[in-house]
Image 1: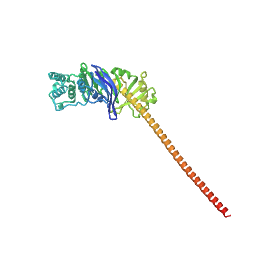
Image 2: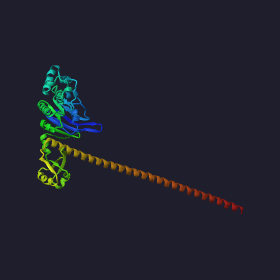
Image 3: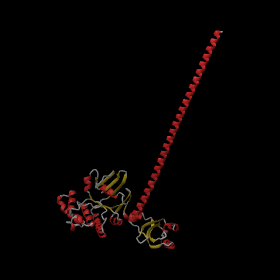
Image 4: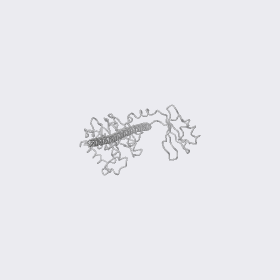
Amino acid sequence: MIEVKNVTKKYGNFLAVDNISFTVKDGEVVGFLGPNGAGKSTTMNMITGFIEPTEGTIIVNGYDVLKKPISAKKQIGYMPEGVPLYSDLTVKEFVNYMAELKRVPRKEKKEKVEKALEQTGIKDVEKKLIRNLSRGYKQRVSLAGALIGDPEVIILDEPTVGLDPKQITEIRKLIKDLGKEHTVILSSHILSEVSQICERVIIINKGRIIAIDTPENLEKKTQEKNVLLLTVEDKNKYMKNLQKDLPEMLECKLIKNNDDGTMQYMIKSDADIDLRKNLFDILPKNNVTIFELKKAEKSLEDAFITLVDENTEKLAKKQEEEMAKKEQEEKEKADKKSKKKGEAEREKAEKKMQKKDEAIKEKSQKKVAKAEKNIKEEEKKEQKTNKNKGGKK
């Protein structure tokens, strides 16, 4: 249904999306995950044709988004982040307007509008002005606008952001139902939501795809370590030195500072090592009060954090290597330039010295020639004088 091939998006020197490729099958519900600024919304905007890729190809249900934009956009219902709506229209007026924009045939329009209102649960507020609705209802109205015209693909960017728990549950159920008739791409920060709704997950970080798999497989792949969640009161800041007394521990990471003054840590060890007994033994001896200690169950959220952290470290290492390589190249270039400059200056100095030597030699030769000339003239004068003296005799 969707093919993204070697897509890149640049804003000046900033690389928002870096050569990504993935496919979404017909009838599949796919979660699109990543930290803020990872490139999720940019990718979604490119799939919908809202912005153009700098490089690469996007095909939606057989239509190239750049070559056949109108045909491609007809396949898509898009609910962008931020819920952009016309607040002076009533709910029904807005859905009607969206039906006209999408060129729903006149004979079918009334039926399609009613279906979208019923599907999204906003039939009871259809005559209200959008500006007077709660955020949850506004989300539903935006979703109704995306659904109108029965598009093959539904793209939802943060559909549950800002909703209360009841509204979130209702929207989740609606998205599940949509997955029975449509291909759905869902972007969300609530990973438990993605785990419940989506069959497959695409994780993006710093513009690059770092994982594509089912939530279950991602959880299994990243469960290589034994992870404990430890909440303590540590007045003497002993936790910084825990590694010395517990060498079996691989990592001790501060997760959060709680309002009651306690701190939560994530402690990792090899999968076959359980550190709970050791912690109960060591921490009280060092004036650390344990409030909670439990074994962490691996979730999609853990898998997401692990993958993003690993990818970020990998990218940071790569950047360091690239910087070191660049510095080395610049140093070699500077050395080469300096050497070349030194050779040029040495050659210049040698030429100058040679010229000076030649000038001195020439000057010396002129002096010798002049002296020889003077001697010859003196000899001629002497010969002439002697001749004159001989004549007088």
